[in-house]
Length: 139
Length: 139
DNA sequence: CAGGATGTAACCCCATCTGTTACGATATGA
DNA sequence: TCATATCGTAACAGATGGGGTTACATCCTG
Image 1 (cartoon, chains in turn green, blue, orange, purple):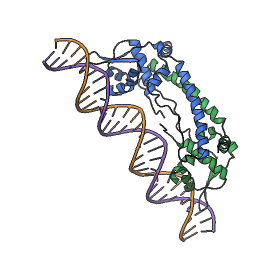
Image 2: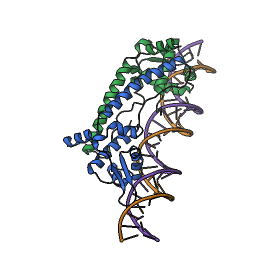
Image 3: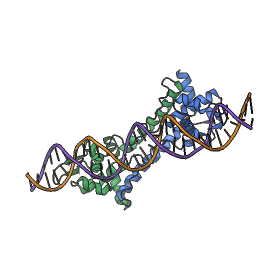
Image 4: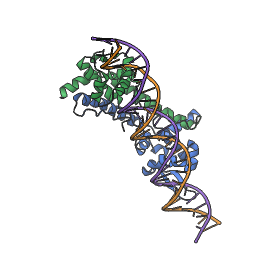
């Protein structure tokens, strides 16, 4: 299904960038993701706005992670990316005013809210350092 | 966002059909959803295969609900529709073998699994009768 | 000032959902 | 028998969104 693959790709590349701890160009990062530099700039734009990475132009420029892996949770990144691919808010609007339609929408929204909250809590409980550690011990 | 509006629409129309308790043609149902009869047949095909509704051809034919609202949970309908719009399994496949990518995928899959399980439990705990009752008391 | 890098717009390709038309299959009833 | 109503389904167009590519302006380094 995989409607949106940005979130895992950003996490993956962000950990590598932090571990190397040096400026990396979009072209370098694009090679790691097997894609195009423009795709990288688009994916990371939100992280720059959120203060997780910084960019510099000109020769020797590129992207650098400015927070430690301990200081970045999945929730932080998720929010900085405008919650990619989140799948809530399916509501019917065929008959505004129909009480049955409204009750369906409320019932589904209740579940969506609970599920989204749980997801965010679990995202907030996981740092990129946790994932980096899991990767190191697994290899 | 609203990637898939089928689930609420099917629930909405299913409750109305059960309350009327008579055969309704695709054209009639389409009017309720402000759409096309073919869209209705597509949306309800899974429910027929799942045994929640039956169809009959020819004049006077159409769709009829064959289970009581008490006997249909959101989970039943969700499964019969092949889980429309479910948003799990976002995994990166840029570097198979990269332990960081694998750790990211595992961490996200853990959350997805927990969240999906919670959603299904809550769907299973809600019957269409619950929603119909909520609609009646609200109006 | 030349070259390398980001920022971003403008496309294309692809998948999915929605809506529409068309047509075959089938059941009803005169 | 046969016209008609209805489902079942294929085929296609439109809208939306992610992903990829090209092009170009902007900016910084040396």
